[in-house]
Image (cartoon, rainbow, N blue to C red):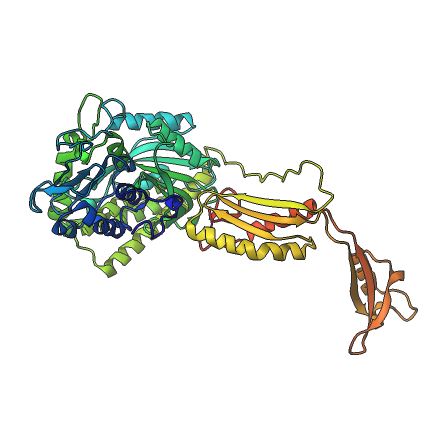
Length: 602
């Protein structure tokens, strides 16, 4: 079912076994959007697997596991969890023959598949999975933070500290939000405990907590190889990017409260989102003069995957054996009780108003940093009210508008203060667009021509859109440029747009053009001498007035005409001028800037 719904990456070879089909489903299914496809595949496979019908129908949540856990051949494993109660069931099997049978019943805590095949190997519930890494081969939680700090420090980043008040994300730390504004260069990295009251689950949910840890990186201006640097950081964590499925999936970020947005990706590691990767375009409702790259790691998800644990509380936090749960599980439970059950609604409404008023007072004192701090406190008060279910639809819009207005005023004042301080960190230099390099001898006969546009992971819709536009524009542009050519073909992938032109002429065809000038009665004075009107026409077109002739049009009005001979330019010179304009004309629903005013999808 999933293979027939867009998993084109894996259509190149037939699926040999039902286990390989499940493996492909797990690798190509989104955690949220494609669960129905996974469930449908289970229903399709039910007769072969002899899964009890009431077990498969009762599934409310199916989570794809790492592709390495699902292999074709002699072993396969699918872990299925119910949303309520977290009851786990496993299907364990080996090349299931027709005489395979199930033991147990639908109400039992575990179903075990038994066969009489000699090749079958049973796995007990307590046996460690074969692919689970040994202790010490992967970093602990705190070691992972240290490795990221060391890696990004070596790339020129300052190692910053978490903020001293609650923030919903690393983006809200002043080291990101305020420093992304203005022309100053800024490269920084830091871990940030992110507090989201609405995600409170009392420590029961294995993947969702009200306090999680992000690792934040800001590169301003964009260095040009941010994706490669990010992949290098995964290697620093011990992740072999050649052995894992790492994907950049379109995910444009926006914060209505901060008046900020950017284009970018969420990064999937074996089908699980682990990082948000964004090119900031606006912050505080202000267009950014220097585009900053934000990389936000979800540390708990990454470390759970590396350590092979199923619950955040089992993460090995230190090399000495202290677990994440031993450090934070009590905090998670008690703060969930506060956020969801005990927080005083009226007191938090009052706090929101007080923080809002104090922020405005700090703005009047021209102190943007404490004003922003009060904005963060009011934002947290709002989040607690939201978690308590105390914010209606109309009220939500009004409170958002108040916070967005404060963010805009804080941002404007911050820029004014940095300008008054004469930009202590300096001003990032403007990006210089390199001149096109032309090498080798120009062809003297018709020859193939290839235009290749390198990109960063174009969204699927943009790939098709760019391809169709190039197919229409290239022949039109070549015709307008008077370059004869053969067939035009366009190829498109997320990282390459390629135009191939057969038999492109080495130069423009010579042109003989008849140009109309001013009316004859205005081109000459009474003495028959050229007037300024005729002189201007001749100067513009490089014509000697002596070569101008008169001719009447269809209405009988006499005009001055001249025949202009234009020698065709070399194709290389024509293309050097035509191609940048051609690329700039490709339109996308949302485009982003880098270090110039040029805009493109990615």
